[in-house]
Length: 161
Length: 126
Image 1 (cartoon, one colour):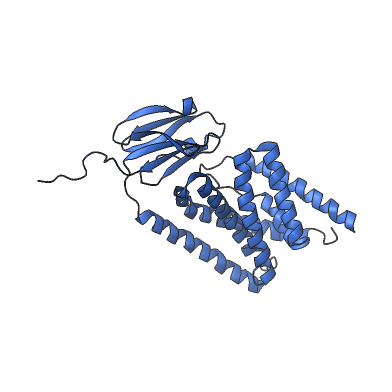
Image 2 (tube, chains in turn orange, cyan):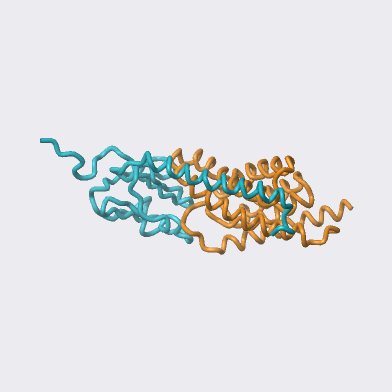
């Protein structure tokens, strides 16, 4: 059982990393921080299938590994800030058991963007606050899409996995 | 949809999504209502000011040893060139309100619009 769990988690990290890379190839609309959040499909899936601790481990390792492989120091700080805040929010929301996968994913996406704004505030000053409305909007839209995909995966993928 | 999400939860989910959209709208209005036309474009590298240009004077300026190129015209500022592969700063477009920023993360460079210097004639007395 233990070995199987470790294998599944390793697979999830690999998948999240590939999705990060795929996402980096999608042209950006020109506003920093606006993106799909494809790796979040894996994180939400793990949150529902494996648990909070496992999802946190997968998300944080993904951020670290992707930054080492493709990123730079600044991109690590942004991703890590976003990932930590997003994880805390999603794990707490899921614990209340009042919301579905969709809202958990949306709040996760918006908090991810919010975390990035906080890091940007520390690095570049308070003017970055003007990005916040756009990032909440884009996070909500991306979160809905990612939430629907995650819900599909939680439902369709064999529970024995 | 109904089979995919538990019915009761889906309703609360939609309320959360609607609330976030409203929040984005309200924040947008709040942040923009306090906006004023700016007077100068201030260039910072690593958070340290390196140069400033009045929005009233048209021109093209090479920044940070040529890593980015700034253009000012019609009271607006924008970047026309950058040495990074994604050109995000160029895509961020034209800015002219106080507080607006163009950010180039790879070069740690920002262009911020600030008040101060007046752009052209603001007030004629007499």
